[in-house]
Structure formats: C-alpha cells, structure tokens
Image 1: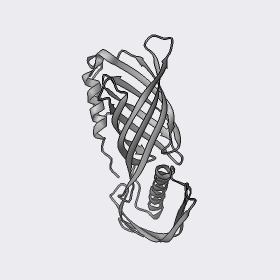
Image 2: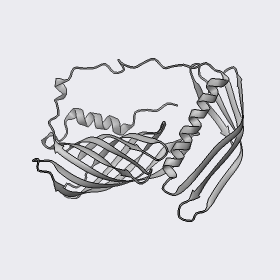
Image 3: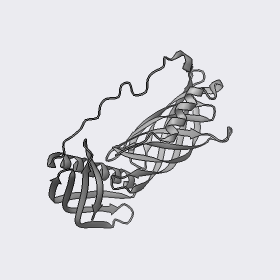
Image 4: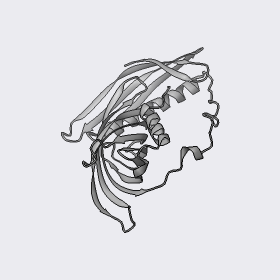
Length: 264
C-alpha cells in the first residue's frame, strides 16, 4: 500500500519556512477528547497570524489516530477555524475536513499565556485495504494552552538531505506464512478502523473469521474462508449480524504481498 504525503502537510512546512505572520507567532498545546472515535489525546502546533498547523494524536476506542492538522481563521474577530487533516487511523490512511471554534476561558498569571476551550467538528474518510472510503465523524472538545515563542530563522538551520536516514525496506518471501501474516494485519487494521469510525453510533462489535484456506502458487496468493460480523445500534438497540464466505487474492511484488481483489 502506498501513501503519499498529504498536500496540507507540505503547505504547513512551506508556511513554517516562509515565516508567515511572524509578528504574531504562538505555540499551543491541546489536550482533549474526540467523541467521534471515543478517545483521549492531544495536539501540538504553531499559530502564525491566521494560520495554525501541527501534529495530533488520539487514542481511539479500538486503535489510534495520528495526523497533521492545518487550520485557517478567516475572520480575525470571529473565533472560527476551518481546516484539513491527514494521517493514519491505526495503519490506514485517513483524511478529512474540520470546522470549529474556540472560546477564551481566561488567562494565566504569565504574561501572554492564555487558556481557551476549543470545540471542533469534522468529517473525514479512512482508506480501507479493500479500496473503500469509510466515512467518520469527528467531535473534539479540548483545552488549549497558548503562549508566544520565538522561532529560529530557517537560515540558521543547516541543510539536510532528504531521505538520508531512510532505511531499506524489509522484504518477505512469498510463502503461506507471510501471506497469512499480511492478511491478518490487513484484517485487524480494517476492523480497528471500522470500530473507531462507527463507535459513536454502534457498540458490541463482532468480527470473526473461520475455516481459512491459504494457497500460494508462485507470486499469486489466495485466502478463502467464512466471516461473521455484527454490531448493535446505540439508540435503537437493534442487533445486525452478517455472515458468508469470502475470497481474497494477493500478488507478491518481489518484496511484499499486495491486495489484488476480494469477493464476499
């Protein structure tokens, strides 16, 4: 699975390098709860004028979400932010949009340091190994501490070569054991992403695989078996369960197994 660097990450790096809005540069730390994935976490970031950006991490119910957030405050006098985020939910690519506001709750005794209550609403997608985009809602209630900082000038940093520390990819042979390990990791990542994205509406998730048959012929791999999935709707209490048989086909690219197709 390939994953390109999101556009907003590149934009955030360029904004930092350009020193946009250095007349009002703030460093902020957030700690809060994402009700969408039912997990606690936090964010670090830099606010330069109307632009803010930085990494975030939330330990969701079944997995974790790590991403980069880029936001814009279009109206200086209105506490409203519009933004985008991109990263991973567990091991799966995830991205989406955010719109929220912050409400000042007072300030510390330290000059320029302020505490604010932040509410952010968002909608995003998680890219499943099957090729589907799984929708999910974000509702973050966080406490933010912000204070001025002095950022070093980009000219003070020594140039670094891109990819100098990159390590060589670890390759696996095309065997039944490595195929099963790839399939198990893919199934677990998909299961965790589904639970985290839908946990606001459903509970008591069930996901079971049985009677698995693994077949490897050269660079081609096939896994067949039975599946049972189910969940209970939080509001109605209705239990939905689905079961059947499925087939997943893989191809070995000389270094690792890649998903080719699936049928269920």
